[in-house]
Image (cartoon, rainbow, N blue to C red; front, side, top):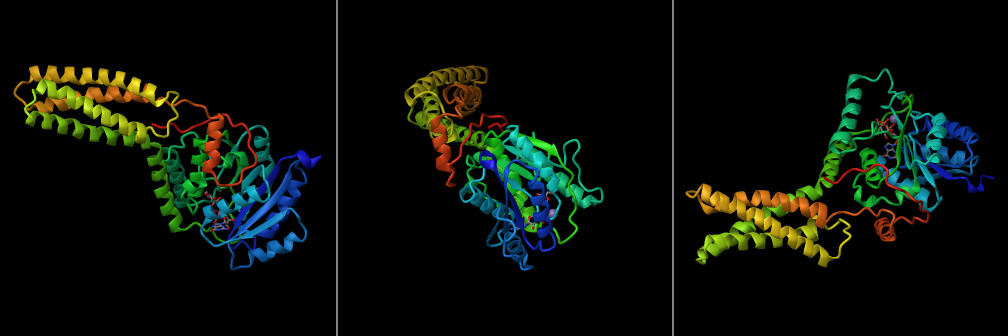
Length: 405
Ligand code: GDD
Ligand code: MN
């Protein structure tokens, strides 16, 4: 009966969890008995000096669904990435869980997270910050502030506005979603992984669901969160912000360069003795052409446009003529209104309305992004991105996404 059931791997990273791991494994196994899924546990232990791995090996004699992998201690994120890859490639998991070893996440909550996956979610978060969820009442001010600001930074700097608990470490994730994420681009080692993975999931259009959980403080052992994790976290949220504003930043740079091209040619033509009323449109046209080339091959390179380059070129020409008209009439108007100031200033103020119109029309018309998330070409590209051996794939219509400004 269980043959067709989903295969689920609970990934538990451990570092010095000698006093917790055995009890957690046993508690989880009891929980599994109530579940219809094919449940597994994968402990990712970074050669803990306290002998955590030996305890897991002992348990393995009793539980054939208990897996153990070791590795170098590179941080929580690195351990999860290794564990997820293993669960996908060697255990053929349909779903993976992230879970702490220290009982901060209750084994009794596993079925609740899993039932959201069964209901269609790709990414379920055991959330402390939705209604009904909680953090321990005895948390000191510093710990509360740390958690609060961490989440605020993830939401308002990294841009994951729609999620309340972005740093949560209790999650259920479909592996078909993991296959669509380029792990090489996450660039994180420590706790920042939680935010980086969530951000990538949102960008991939995952169906995300938060359900309330109560986070319990550990009784045995210590937290492994270190200063380097906090530093990486701060860099990571800004890095994510930069990534999602990339198109906007690039367009600004191309625009700024266009100003120099425009004024440079204008000055060149003037020194060649050309009449300023003729030099102006030529300089405008040259800057428009250089802007188009940079925008086409750099700024909007990632956009999937429906037109061929020929049609895009035609549209671009139309936009250019309009831009030229707008810039030139501004130039002429200003030249007559303020005849005593340098013509470069008239030309400069002509660029501004021209550039705005140029951006809007090119962004929303010439280079308009067409959503075809489920097309074969798209899937091929995703497969190429991900070097994990993803054999399973499901249809994942877009649900939530972080907009590209
Ligand atoms: N393999 C491995 N390598 N495991 C690690 C490492 C590492 O470098 N660092 C931590 N772990 C394991 C711990 O042994 C534990 O099982 C789990 O990862 C969580 O580590 P804790 O040190 O207990 O984390 P925490 O309680 O400070 O943080 C929890 O809450 C955060 C949000 O407030 C975790 O759930 C985090 O994931 C979460 O972001
Ligand atoms: Mn903990």
